[in-house]
Image (tube, rainbow, N blue to C red; front, side):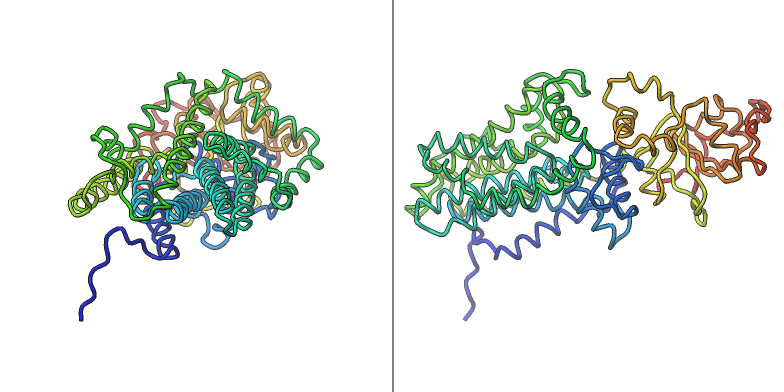
Length: 542
């Protein structure tokens, strides 16, 4: 006898769902090159951690880099130790953060709401273009969003389980564990934001007694045991760590208007509306009655779940709307509650037999938009540093050095798989007074933690002869017009060039002549190469 087909809202087993989430988020994580600056920066720091063998101190070009804690780099470096410096390994921390957020949302709603709302909320979340791209972008935002989401949902689940006299300690311990992971992912917001959401939810639902769970000593023990050692070790090794990491990177950055990407208070409203299409369109569809269910307990809890999601959404959006400096990825933690609210709107009061075709069509359309966005980014957003690949058979040999002229291209160390820091030539005295948030300030700030190493890697323009006129080969990376301002480059071998950058091999001076750059005559400009028009293996996408 043929078994009847399972209803569409019957969810698969959690282990299979989580595997499907990972497969979906990883499906296109390998397709596109690393973008500048974020993906090149964070992927490069993770690779440098692997090559150096120092898994404690994140380093940017060999210098201690304390903009953010190390969890992203630990995961990325571990993945690269297996797969090598490939794009999907650099993005794996974000993929795992997205999978954690989606899995936590499904498991929480399956237990405390309805199965069909749990399943649809998860489908909406993972096929939202904003979420999908965020989970395949190698920066810290999705990793901390996953930690925040899991912390909120585990803590709320612990409070609800405690009310029903069900086992709650494991849930609460899990919330503290993910809070510790959030601290190691991006700092204080990994702890502060979930605490704000849960505290406001407890107040709104008159669960003031549940606030005592914040004093649960085993939870604090988990937090301190997991997150504490790294912060203590950094403070002991670098006495200025606390002031830079906590005061500057958290409080001064939040309050200051001197950073990049300044936008108005309203900025995140169109961001959330536009980047969650086509699902966001359901907000404008007239709502029917509440989602029907035969579970009386679920109906009784539904208002509390609704309040949790609304408070969660509002806290994230308002918190990140306060500072003038705003980046799109900051509000990724708001997507799980928004997905729930959209799914609730889809289901409310609509017959299941007529709803299924619409849900399937919307899911396919949303998934197609996700894939299309990845392809569009792949085609239109490949930075020159990602495309500057060395020709087959050429590589930076041991003992050779790399110097970047007047810029630091984050992607070069990753794609050239460099094992040693590069030298960076710039006007570093002027850089000390530069308050703009850019590569120059990042490297200069990092140099303060290791002046001895910085003296070897940060080269003033006037000192170029000292580092180039040596009996060793130097690979030089700069703008593809750098030969116009540096005529001595015509004495070097042009190795690779694309529409933005070029690389040369400079053999230096076998005798160590400190005036080797002065002996290069200014060439006839008509004889200069035309790098912007060079194609083939020297300028392709590799």
